Image (cartoon, rainbow, N blue to C red; front, side, top):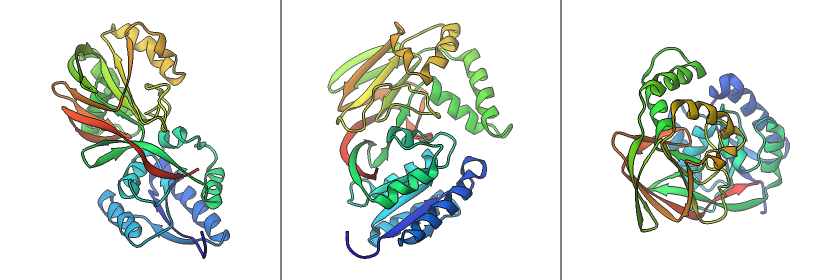
Amino acid sequence: MTGRRDIAVLSNPSAGKGRGARTRALTVARLREAGIHVRDLAGADADESTDLVRGAVADGVDAVVAVGGDGLVHLAVQAVAGTAVPLGIVPAGTGNDAARALAISPGDPAAAVQRVVAGRTRTVDLARSGATYYTTVLCAGFDAVVNERANSMTWPRGQMRYNLATVAELRTFRPLSYVLDLDGEVVRTDAMLVAVGNGPSFGGGLRITEGASLEDGLLDVVVIKPISKASLVRTYPKLFRGTHVTHPQYERHLVRRVTIAAPGIVTYADGERFGPLPLTVECAPGALTVLS
C-alpha cells in the first residue's frame, strides 16, 4: 500500500459500560501516532452509524475499524462484506465473540490496534441470510427466546435483566418442533435449541458451536435435543469450555446451507435481533477481509 492510509474508525462510546469511549480514544490516538489518517465515525444511533460507515466505504477508505462489541461489528460487516475493504476489530463490548473468533484478545485493546497498524489481512467466511450477514452464531431456540423476553423488559438494566429473563423462560419453556433442511436433507426433530455457527461462540464466550471455523466454507449446525431443566442448568457451565459436546442430546452437522423452521421463534445473530423463522442461512466463503 502506498501513500498515507485512510482508516474509518467506527465506535459506540456507550459500549462496555463506558469502555467504548476509552478504547476509541486509545485507538484514534495510536493510529494517528502511526501516521494514519483517521475518520472518526460515531453515529447517534444504528441507522446513522450505518450510513456513516457505508459512506466511508463508498468513498474509498483503506479500512474500517469497529471499536465496540459484537453489535457494532455486525453493523460494520454489512458495509464491508463482499468488498476489498478490510475490517479491523478493537473489542470494547460485553460479548466480543467476533474478536475471539479471530484470536483478538478482548482484554488487550492496544494489541488489537497494533494489528490494524501492521496492516496484514486475510479473508474469512461469513454467514448470510438474504442480504444480511453475521459473523458469529445465530440462535434459534431457548437462547433466542431469552433474548426476546429480555428486550421486552424495561427493568432491571444490564446483565440482571437477562438473568431474570432466563429464569422466567426456564419455568415455562418446552422443546420446539423443528424442520431442518441440511444441504437438501430434511430432518424433523424436537429440540431445546438450534444454533448455526460461522464462529464458535456467542454471549461472551459460550462455545455452543465448538469447533466452528471461519475458514472452512461450512456452517456448524448444533441441535440440542430435549433435556430436563435440571440437565440444562448443569450443562450451561460446560458451554464456556466447549465440553457440552459429549452430552448425548447434542448433535452437530456441517453444511453449506440450512433452512430452519419452528413456530414462534425470532432469531438472534451477533447478539442482534435477526428475524423470525423460517429462514435460510448459507455460508459466504471468503466474504470478509480482516486485519489480523
